[in-house]
Length: 358
Image 1 (cartoon, rainbow, N blue to C red):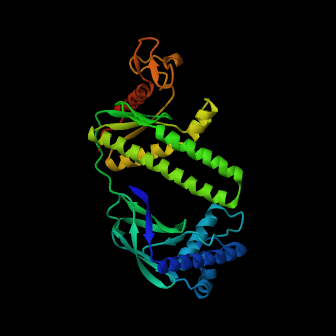
Image 2 (spheres, rainbow, N blue to C red):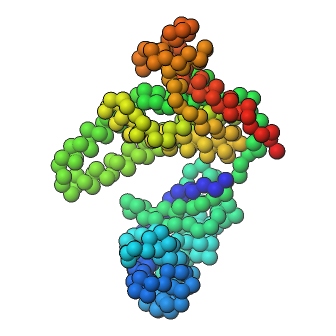
Image 3 (cartoon, helix red, strand yellow):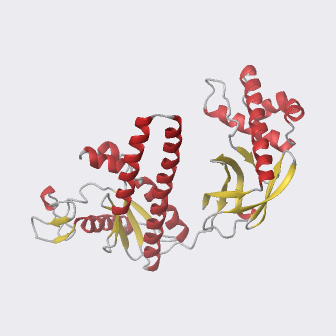
């Protein structure tokens, strides 16, 4: 499975300046190439290279391969939109390939700058053996908040697919970010408190409108996004491990269009809009794929109104956010757990129709 890994670079002060200078020259070259491309209306890589290669080499001091990568960046951008001339930010990404970027060890790279190759320490997440043999294609060097990162596509080996003997259903919500059909709840209390705190701070900063307020607003928005992402990673990892340990598949709600479908209060719509449910679903899917666990998207309609014991659907079944009591059979249960069991049942229906494993 191919995944993008964010790798943090630890250059010395001198190396940091080298990378920044290289990035600046690379993007100046991209702007020059874009000007020639737009003027001549030539957008293919080969055609652009014939027009600008010599001039870029002589003018900007880039290596041969960096010139090729700059031409490629400009050409790819015009594939998306040819309606206007493109301009590139001085701190825009540099595209590196294996000729100008090498992973020497699991925690060190050799990267080309205008002043030659430099070795730098790196750090990344759970992929403890990030070597050249696992890197696929190009890597983008990006600069964010005075820190350099490499966005690297890696080939993560997948485990053998399991033959599941059941399904774990996962219900997503606000009070509980996720609830499984086993009855495990991942509370959203802390997340709601953090979201509300950030909302108050951002509201004050937006009212201030000063340069420093806007800078602070950008900084705390990044913190909130990283917090959400980390919580979603933790929840997804735990759910997938539970499914793996019990040889079960996973069923999640297909929440496509949840914001547009929502007919609840403004406060609830705001909560739905400010939690990354789609991200949580995607994390569950890719982590499950690596573990060889099937994931089924199921129709979420009526999962909160249907009794998991008798199948009766009635909006009166759900007394409030947490309590469910069937009007037909009097089955009583936590409302989120009941919904997750309905999701699991729909997943079992898909599981029963699966082809035999190869």
